[in-house]
Length: 332
Ligand SMILES: NC(=O)c1ccc[n+]([C@@H]2O[C@H](COP(=O)([O-])OP(=O)(O)OC[C@H]3O[C@@H](n4cnc5c(N)ncnc54)[C@H](OP(=O)(O)O)[C@@H]3O)[C@@H](O)[C@H]2O)c1
Image 1: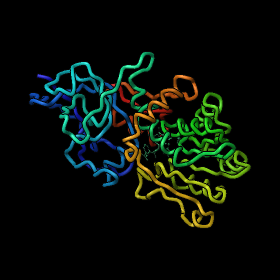
Image 2: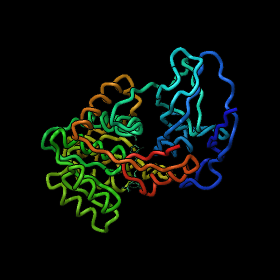
Image 3: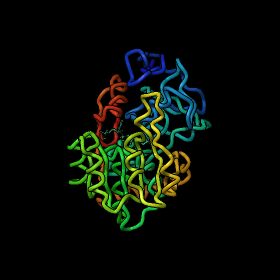
Image 4: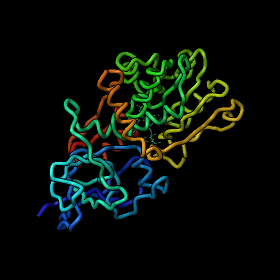
């Protein structure tokens, strides 16, 4: 009998995840029915949206108390009674925060097969070629960058921000990142080619942002919200674009993390929120482009790999304390 460890949502977190919010349980994997396949999860994608799913209905319904926590993952088919999957197939999708998942081909959120690509680690399908890379890609399409414009990216050293900024460089923008440590800022400017990076935890970060954006800001790739977004809006040029990707500063608080919208009016900004799932039909096209950029060294990525399924709750908290750089993944 195969045993499955699962993280179950027991109560809705109040701030960062605390003991008792998620519970680790062990259950037997049920016998497969005809048409089903069993996938063993190798890597789990750790995403800020998981904290939102624990708390409220958003673009997906909140996870119910007592349910397996929702999560994306990379898995391998280990047994199949489905014609669509064979043993050894590699798949990505919503696996849940668990070690095994049963997939039925009729499932709305069935796992998608991914190819084996030489010299490319499987974790890339959760990061640079996965949801966060795709989010950066489509978000930058919404930002409509033009050569010579100034792009500011918040949470710039994270999975989405680091790729969005590099796409801005490919389009010929002046790219300024905002991140939470000097080391992260150094990585952005010295390795990823950002023109400047500002540590928002330094006392004079607003002056530094002003110095780094002498021509104002044309595109805000917004991942954070709150005070950071407010200051970026203060420096936006007329008719600038705000790509509303995330508002992470509010996810662990009651505060929604929104900046004042008065500036959007006065500066005639175009503000567009988006959810990467809106672009599902174009994922293959975007992943191919990202893969080419990655192969030709036009984009670089970094991963924070946390070893051990039991560390998943700590890994989620790392996103909110800034202990991660690049894509955060739990190796099961
Ligand atoms: N719209 C979509 O479809 C979509 C899809 C994926 C992700 N997102 C959004 O994109 C954003 C980034 O997600 P990700 O998966 O790439 O995570 P990530 O950037 O890899 O990790 C989150 C980062 O946010 C920063 N952060 C956390 N709390 C902060 C605060 N209060 N103020 C300023 N910075 C803070 C931390 O870096 P520092 O050290 O710099 O603080 C942390 O490393 C999130 O807002 C997420 O919700 C949206």
